[in-house]
Length: 420
Image (tube, rainbow, N blue to C red; front, side):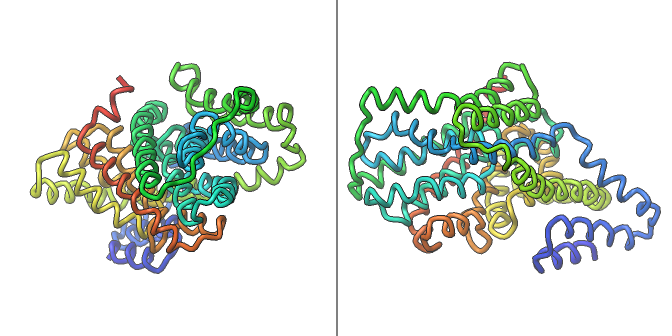
């Protein structure tokens, strides 16, 4: 009966956190072991007793401070220095700026919202079709869950009980490969559609753009450098990044008004609380999974189909593409990690880092695919392009992501090489 309750509430669009709690409560009632009710709340709070979870609100706050502090437009200007002169220069600027933003924000939806407002109008002014400009921006948002820092990596690391810093490092090469595949897509489309040729900045303009963006670049340096060199944990790096974003936006750029901090704290708390509530609910949902021996039963089924780790990951990819279409990526990662990770590591000897990178990239595709596709609709509302026009220009990027997923599934070294 518990699986029926789970599926029924899920398809009735009940919030995922409530679905997890209701399913766990129903299971306890159905099992007759009512003593578990006494420890229900304790189990929920226990799910949040992880130092690494502090990184989630801190990374969200960094994104708010960066947005308010005027760093986005300076990073876009910096991207123009490196790729602005190529044919289709603004499309490359869009992609490179998204890479810079991915190393700061860590949230695909936030990145899509910010970049759609910032760069789509500029691309339209230079003759790009609005649907393509928005599609490029939305695709660039897919870099956020892979290039560190990543909120999905934080959540996966907590659920998988692996070091979050190493999970971040595992995403560096896959993030660069994904960005290179998007650049190739832009080059092929630009060649066939004859995009307008960009103009290179003069040396003086380039130096001014570089000088203006240098303080903003301290933020990804503080985050990634602190983790790579073992100076700080991801949570400490997120705290340092928030402080740097505040100081740069207020004292260096002068765009950040300290009087607006209260509103930013409230927005950050509201957004972070939704994610943390889902994680707390997932810890009690773990009871159902453990008592029903779901991973063991699923492992027995899948291992009868294949003993090949690559084929197993292809099966997982196909299933998760469907899951991501109807369930939010963060909710999905909370649901499927306790079920599939033990199978991947126990039955197929797959590295948890490779599995985490593949799963997180796969599930974030759901942001851009109907019927849920929240990222698609955010991009549409921010840019004014219709979802249909965005999808018509988006499909080459989605094919590129699918090919990268196959490559990452086949070659574990791409996710584990930098970890050592």
